[in-house]
Image (cartoon, rainbow, N blue to C red; front, side, top):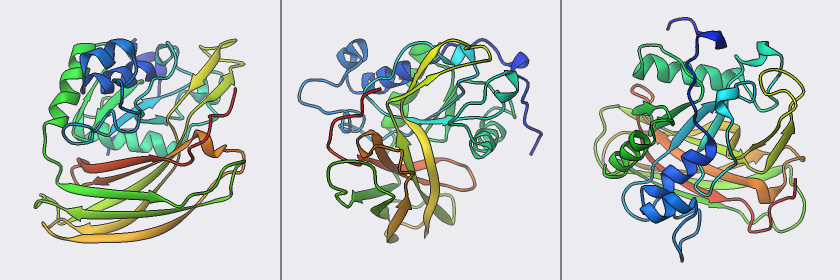
Length: 282
């Protein structure tokens, strides 16, 4: 694998925001939702992205230190936002970044773009990538992904943590059933915890003096299990996920997705909010 290109000076000026991703995902269901930035009447945010067709996993690689990554607020349909760490050298350390996320983006770059990196970058179901400034392309690729029959079905259940403050552990039940033969011998089921409603006053770097709002931020990602990639194979597991006590339950969601470890293609997914309680105020 080639060396990660970490110099922000070489990154093209791409305008892609989390809000654009949210609107784009909703637009895969209906153009009205795309314009309004919210799901159609009678459809909640959790189901808006998967009412018709296959669920689509959107991965946004972004950074608080990148000025072209910031433009607007969060939307209704939730992707996975991975904050990379290679912008930290520009004067601001993103509090949500991780070298693990930078390495994940590098793997996608190796598989999809000839090792070319950009922030912010959108990866769709692990099989395609684009930049959000090309809105029509984003919508087209999401619609394309939704037209594909999922190769695996994912079930996700969260033990009711009750109302109130934060918790230190979260009990999650996940199950996967392979619906059709895949090109890989094995498939991995991953579980992510995301947090929304994050507000940061930036003290340095390209976004100095700005107040940034972040949603869908991946806080934890771990492999739950591996299943054979043959039709009819299935596995289930209960996970006890550690939570930082500072994470309000009302701001958290759990995403489970099945990924081919060789091609990185995602063949099934599911999402659930952690607690049906009001979001914490900034």
